[in-house]
Image 1 (spheres, helix red, strand yellow):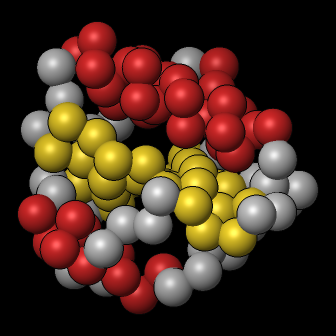
Image 2: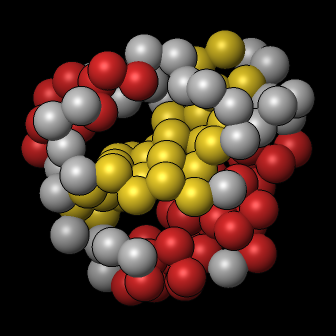
Amino acid sequence: MKIVAVTACPTGIAHTYMAAEQLEKTAKKLGHAIKVETQGAMGIENELTQADVDAADVAVIAADIALERPERFDRIRKVEVAVQLAIRSPEAVFGKL
């Protein structure tokens, strides 16, 4: 499965990156392709292109704040979860796909 993901927490520092790392590690373990964008104190990093989103089967939004440019995901199935779920139980996130 091709997955795009965005992680974002209120401060945009540790938890944003911890969630991204957990999603990447778990996707690899489960045999999925994933590209993760982070939104936080440093702005948008590893920004997903519209082509990335269009080619994906699903978008995982692990965010506790409003995303920048959420309209990019209007035409794709989304799974929205709290950042803490992505950090503590990434398998549960993939179970929702």
